[in-house]
Image 1 (spheres, rainbow, N blue to C red):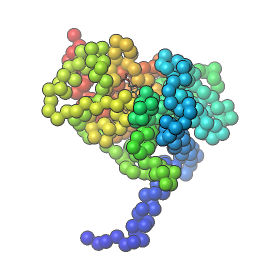
Image 2: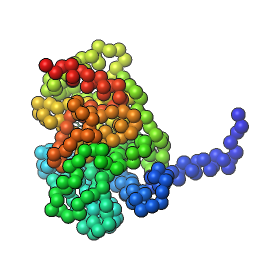
Image 3: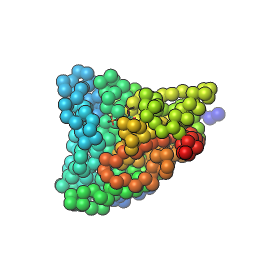
Image 4: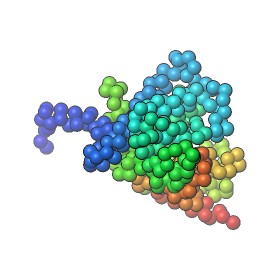
Length: 344
Ligand code: AFP
């Protein structure tokens, strides 16, 4: 086989290092038009938010006021962590004076946050979970950020974000950041799923894998089995079946981003069923389930609430919750079949 010349090797390495988020968006959209420029700049800002959050997480144990709770309760009725507040504020700060996003909606804010100076030209809304799995922060385990981008239809606050109450198939981009052994950013513009790794020496997210496909099936199931007796019977039947099969492993970290990333790479299924405590499910539709469902479908997988695909589920309110079954197509089908069988 012919050896690559030194100059060919340099060109290949440099090309790889230069495939940053902003360049990748332009390549994907094959355009330098205004929409492509906006989305490219928007992804770059999300990358900046991710770097700021990763930086703080990397030495949180040494920073006063980085760990623990604030003493407040958020709109979801959950105790707010200091890192939740910081991460939420990071997204607001990076989008100020950007001209890109007029409105931000997050798990941590009861109502959408308007950035008036951006509104005359900012045509998008960013929905996000700033720090998914934040209970993991204090024990130095994986956490993530989840985001989705939608086109904005109304530009004043009196409409109360009614345009956001539309199914997830209206998302134009979605992704997540995984703060793990390395910091990863995974995103899709509706043209496949692509993985970027933060190269600390460059301070840039660099393309590591493009067009990731979820395996058709896998041997991992990811669920909080502590809730077993709170689930509908169909989920219990599915888990009993997994216990009987050889080669299957349960893996659960308490952070959707981390658990989904494993499934994306290795196949299998993540489940968060409805429970007695959370009869509508625990995960938030608009900024957790829908962005992940967008990615799953783009990677050839599936995402369901047990009755219908997540991407067609109609939200009734900004902070709606839903059950989530997501991952390899064959595994999601099998969970749905167990649910259908158990219906009296
Ligand atoms: P936060 O986003 O409030 O940190 O919640 C994390 C999460 O929504 C999701 O990432 C996990 O999969 C799930 O909750 C864990 O919940 P349990 O602790 O009930 O298993």
